[in-house]
Image 1 (tube, rainbow, N blue to C red):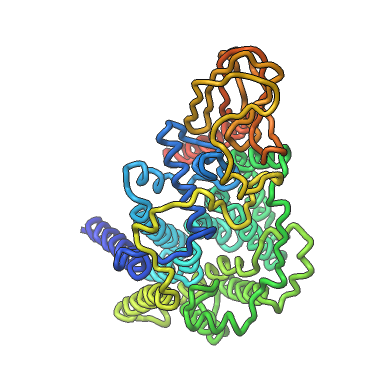
Image 2 (image 1 turned 60 degrees about the vertical axis):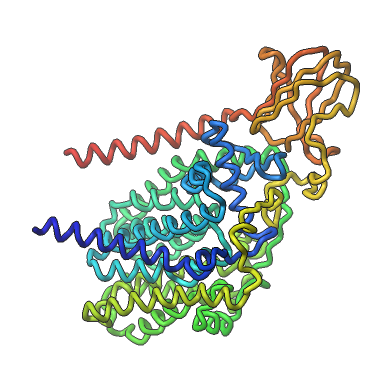
Length: 546
């Protein structure tokens, strides 16, 4: 009977998560078969093209593509090396099955919501153990205004993926500093998942850990196990992430990209405190903000600060409040403008960590404020209603951005991101729109025939080539290799004169094949990360067996 109750509770919880995951999408993505979004160079078009490119690669039996060949009208874009496809496979498979991009978006966003509900619920339960506290945390966190800003306004799939793994990483952080200090594996898995979703978010987690170190320096001196666990988590995370970091570093070392030209101004992009309060209480998700629920949770916890007994709760409340101040223009961001921290781009990115901390602190004490099941259910309904209303208000505020499914399905292959970060510095995006999609002889002479392009593979016949320089209709990145008659290897280089396109030098006659081949660093790093993962899985299975 006990087992049946547990199963029933699990089924009902998952059903609540599923229903809530759908309802939050109704006003802006389902109603009237319209999707609210900015088109053009928005994150929406960028990430939809990432999905399209991965789907096309899978269609060509390329399971782990390094170049997204759907971008720039088939010239290719190396976004996959800088922005992992890890969380895009479900969406790409849906696209592969023949669903339209609008259908893929709605279903995939439902999946992201559902997974965030589950990961946040599980994570809190691992720390606190109580069902209701975990349920409240999962609703506050998943339906928080800042996450909805990324979901419904920015369409930032990378950061939405990071939201799934952040609570898991927090389990490890909490255990190391406030619980069983030997339980570091959750931090490893959580931060590794974040790395493969969103390259900037691990910096936020690292900063959170640093703050916890400063707050617990006395305890660390007494118990070095904290340092040992952090070192283990960091070391294993690095091994698991080599498959991401090393290929990216290799590409950066061998080429100069437009991202090095980016000059974000942290000081100018910092929000005013009054704007944060106004946007929060209006739950205005067109701006990055905490939202009314999280802000009220902050106020309630500070009003009851003297009643908080747990040291960890007090520390996390103070830390979250400090980060909130730091996210505004009250903090002298000009100090860090010329440091590596400028890659944070915007101070409001701290809202991800702030949201996590405030939701956790409140949920940990929520049963004292909501001491009956009726009140707790009412709280969940209020959180859901406010979330749904924020999506509805977004559509009402900007009705012209409500796009029909038919219009939404029309993708823009040139939406590579407003910053064009992963385009070679010598390339101009506009120039690609007028370029030929056929190979061209620009120096010397040769007869070309039987040209074929499939994904990142080009084949053609050449005849009587004399001092021939051939421009190929693919954007060059390190990894492209050429071979003649399946025997002789030739060098493929980038042509600055021709907008960074790949070029080869030919002599004589034969069949040329140019393809992107994984570099030695890519293969070795992938092997190390894969072996490390299997070792962890094997160790966990062995540990449970004994």
